[in-house]
Image (cartoon, rainbow, N blue to C red; front, side):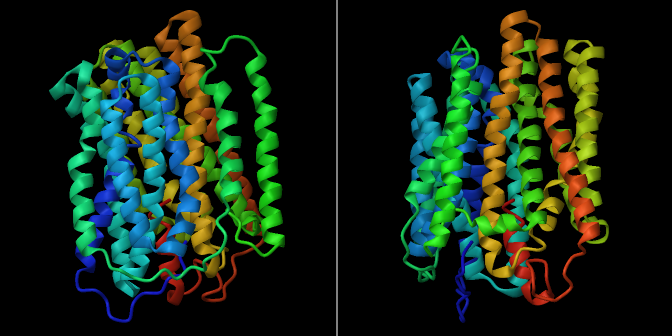
Length: 499
């Protein structure tokens, strides 16, 4: 996302500074998954409604995603160090406020602020790595960042389960947020001393605040009737859908106008003239809308429906997390040889895995479900690993190097917004059936089926992209695209870990 150059004399403290970046990235991404196992604790300890639980998870992902692109632009204009420290401080304070929240409404408000702060930190992390490292060192630094991202997401449910098991159900959810405080404070203090004072390299151009407001309000209005489906009776709420489409259409028109006038748009719409990028971005959005909802539903079902403890609930998803890491390692090698076929195989594996969990819910008695679903989750995890990183690589292959940062930002934003929208959609299916029929098993199966349906949409898009690439082979000129030649390899690596 940045055009900044690496300094000619590398800072001797750059690896320690990288540790600061990794610590901030760890806690911000930990919060995308650690809260899932705390939802039943939230319901009991704070009286959080179904809609509140959805907002706590999806609201964080939504504001995280919406902040990524403007925050990256802000870092370009004002300097990565300042933006990073501001975002980290805001995230730490918001975590404290979430833990101290006295009502569900205030928790949602603070959670939205926390997500915004995480979205400010993320692009600065990749930008700082680009500034501090070059060549093989940069590739190594991004590799470590990718590992931390995977570990933080996988560790979330287990860490949340351990905290709630140690503190108790009523107040355990508060410690899911308090755990960020010592890490956040230590990282901020270390960042003041270790992060390099490098100049901002971006142009001091007008910030597209109106574009941010149009995009944010459009997505927010679209999600409202889905998240509030049970709380707002009647059909009038669905009138918000066309309002949301109008707002999103206005955003598209505004961004095109910004481009015509020579101003920096929030989103580089020219990227969507590349059909391979458009299809890849849609695959990413729909996949994240499908698979991230599974852990949201699974934690609720195991704890509220089957009486699992938060710790036991967190342990049940370990097969998926471990297999996802293995699949990602294999996918990074296989995509070079087999291309989009790897993603198609991965999406098929996730769909089969989720269908296997559905079958386990139907066939296996209550508390044995954790063991019965281990194999399907293992299959789904391998599929997930074969999907995310290879899809990112393929989506960015035809993007020119000088637009790689903008493309990576759009891709990440789509993932977060997809996660938020998917939780809203699948969550509404789950809670609606639960409210009308009270059968947790059936509600879980319908929720999983909805998630599989979304993933099948991603699979159809992947097949379409495969056909597109067969008709129009990849450009061979070195350095022409993000995946071009060895001289430009850092550009691809710079966007892959954050995807």
